[in-house]
Amino acid sequence: MRFSALRVLKEGLTGNKGWTPHWRDPAPKPEYDAIIIGGGGHGLSTAYYLAKNHGMTNIAVLEKGYIGGGNVGRNTTIVRANYGLEGNSQFYSHSLKLWEGLEQDLNYNAMMSQRGIINLFHSDGQRDAAARRANMMISQGDDAELLDKHTVRKLLPNLNHDNIRFPIYGGLYHKRGGTARHDAVAWGFARGADQRGVDLIQNCEVTGIDIENGVVKGVQTTRGAIKAKKVGMVVAGRSGQVAAMAGMRLPVESHVLQAFVTEGLKPCVDHVVTFGMGHMYMSQSDKGGLVFGGDLDFYASYAQRGNLPTKEHVMEAAMCLMPQIGKARVLRSWGGIMDMSPDGSFIMDKTQVDGLFVNTGWCYGGFKAVPASGYCMAHLMATGQPHEVAARHRLDRFETGRGLMDEEASGSQHNLH
Amino acid sequence: MRIACPLCGERDSREFSYKGAALALGYPSEEAGFEAWDDYLHKRDNPAGPTRELWYHGSGCTAWLVVTRNTMTHEILSVELAEDAPESAQENTQGANA
Ligand SMILES: Cc1cc2nc3c(=O)[nH]c(=O)nc-3n(C[C@H](O)[C@H](O)[C@H](O)COP(=O)(O)OP(=O)(O)OC[C@H]3O[C@@H](n4cnc5c(N)ncnc54)[C@H](O)[C@@H]3O)c2cc1C
Ligand SMILES: [Zn+2]
Image 1 (tube, rainbow over the protein chains, first blue to last red):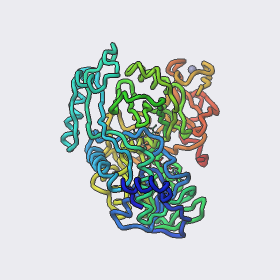
Image 2 (cartoon, rainbow over the protein chains, first blue to last red):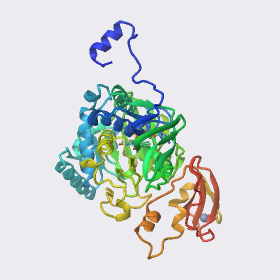
Image 3 (cartoon, rainbow over the protein chains, first blue to last red):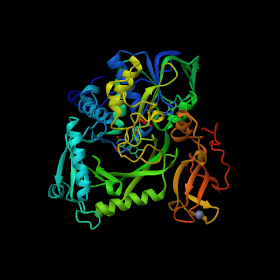
């Protein structure tokens, strides 16, 4: 079924009886050409681009829960291309371009909203750093603008601009950045993959990876054994457990990241605002809720919930940035499992096992990467060669020290990003 | 999450900072190759379940602690002073992946 305005009108007039499920619910076949473990954003986009760009349609996505039940449905939906280092710069630039054509490509309303991102700064030194970042973004071919304090005051009238400790000096404005509806992104890729013949198999947990003489043969699952010549591990926060099934230890530690949403309010924040000095950021959803978050809790966790100290810290930062937020009630808070890599950048590579590929280390920023990650992962799995914009994201860069991508320059060590 | 420091008693987790897997108690020999250092510095068992890790009681007695904690529930199973803890740098949780 194709979605269109005409279709909506027709269904509206005929009692909405013609809508059909967006994807099938197939039973697993005994064998596929390729299997993708993990039905999050990255697994689904990998399947979609394998089918679309490489004509591989005899493939399956195996998801232990339901489509969209992982981090892809738990994030704060920010999309941007403001990375600075060679490698990340090209990759996220490519991803933003894919986002810009995504809804037309998928024929799906992902509520992509290029409302712009404003990174606030509060000192001359920070302004210099913002100017440097803006220049990097412009030279990678993306957009960036340095705003003075008067312009920020006009664009964001509801912030506290005169806080004594953090007066707002200006902002780095990335106009093409914004948000997208996370669930719809997962559903759009799922539907697109399904329409091209990909089997999306839910409630199917991978429990083992079959390897013979260094070559992958397939996987064991809660719904039986499935054979495949190529297997991609695309399980984000659960990467450690799945890699262990192939006898691998990854340079990844899983941490919890929390987020919060208030009751619906009248429009009061038009952009995505980041308050780096408070480790806090915010945007307003189309329903009116202020969606905001902060830093990791900073300890290993799979609990999908965090603790009170981080909540308190984020609330304090929010009050500092926008005191009137104190009047709003917080409706929900939640946490997701983040696959943290030592240098803060992702990993996309072959493994020592023939036919087995790994996609992990997205840290807290893998939502914006969903289109390009699938695009490049599909290229890697189909051709055996990395795509040029993800060629630097090698698994062995930590061992050799060559090609580390430490955006924050805080060191290539766990627990520093 | 509250952590029972052997010296200070049960305290708010805000008083502590997290270092990571307790394999940092030991380190490879100088002659050990890149692979051993990579295993030590970067690779992690990253278990979903009980894990042994290092915490620092910075706002208390400033002791380093070895905390055994369940990463699925945040339950703290035991706490000992790092100086008393066995230096078996290996995480003792192999097979505990849930
Ligand atoms: C609070 C929060 C805010 C965030 N905000 C942003 C943001 O603003 N911008 C941004 O770019 N990123 C953000 N992120 C990060 C982003 O959500 C993740 O990096 C990204 O979603 C991870 O990739 P994924 O979608 O494929 O992961 P997931 O959706 O987690 O997919 C992995 C899937 O693998 C499945 N799986 C695991 N083990 C198995 C198994 N053994 N067998 C079968 N299936 C298995 C899981 O069930 C899961 O569905 C945020 C994350 C959180 C938690
Ligand atoms: Zn103490």
